[in-house]
Image (cartoon, rainbow, N blue to C red; front, side, top):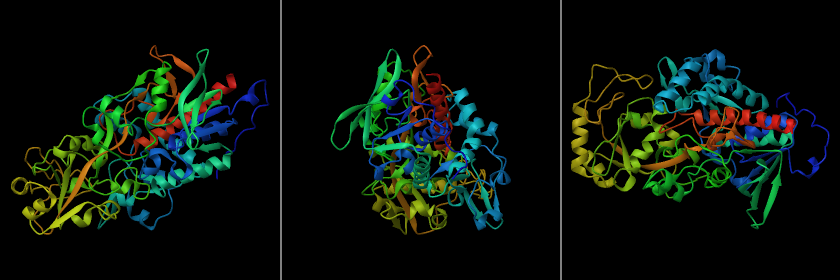
Length: 511
């Protein structure tokens, strides 16, 4: 536990005791808890309202692997942040400076990322994570996700190196414990549906008790929205993301239906970011419980695809599986699969690449996989056109540039010169048995949200702050568009959550 403790709350004043809290935070995920901790450490009374019951709480954060992208100067800069591990002395962790972080955000979003939000994210990322660690969150090097073991040890790649101990479950367990230690009032089973606005000032929220359906008002001097986007609302997905998005599988919480997002818009908030795209991944297509699975969480993703090829029902490839490290492509390939016949595809591997796949994902209980000793037999069993797959694999194998040595730790330039090309990590599929993992589109969160400044103040159409209203996490739009660098979601949640909590506390003091 940190030595940082809440400052003494200011003395009671007229009307204050009639409030439910000084600051209300809507949503008990990583961003919401970060805001709540910051406001509580400023000496304020904090009420966190979470739609789900406690055993299903945590928002999308619970369903993640806990990966958190921060700027740093290499392994020595991280040693005091991470839990002990005997593998650390064999690990090489390249520096990931702030300018590279910012360049990655601009590159993967084609320059559609908000420059001010980006600057604050990259500059505050490590300091904010250190703040959370001092409060009691635990972090580790992500050996099984971000490095391949070689004779020389572990070489980390892709700018994403650390994450929560225990993954997303650990993130939420740690945050919940810290909230209890700091004395935050966290109430579960309260579905917030509207804002209370008086004389242009947001003074609370309207909540519905999930058990009895009773409506009541919760009043405060400031409200922080951290209730996510609209990815769990099939109707809104069809409206904003486009036709076919109702078929996407919801990876995370079913509670992110956009209610408070729409409520803020109805009260004059401006839209921020790209409302037409979402974070979408390759997701187990045929597992019986492949939506909002609390037991398997992130294990339903399939992220070793750079080691193989991806084909549709016709046996045709349609993406460059080796365009970049998976950290920079995985969040956009889901929507490409949604556009394929039946909104399904298959990742194809052989006996040589199968042992390199992430065990937690490709060996999970009930995994959707077909195995066969021939490519044609694999296609027949999986429901892929056998002639089409055989033609694709034959052409792929024949086109590989063998003058580059295969190395999964770097962009090795080992190219398959077909259409579309495979730019890196091309290995011939020629060693039986062969494996086909069925995947579809798993939607994580929507990139569009509310327009806000770097302190989470929600802005109206004229660019003016709406008094008393703040936003953080996935409800704050502007950072991402079309794609996203892995681990920057949890990082943005903690950075802008903390800043929103601090800014909300300042508003309360002025009031």
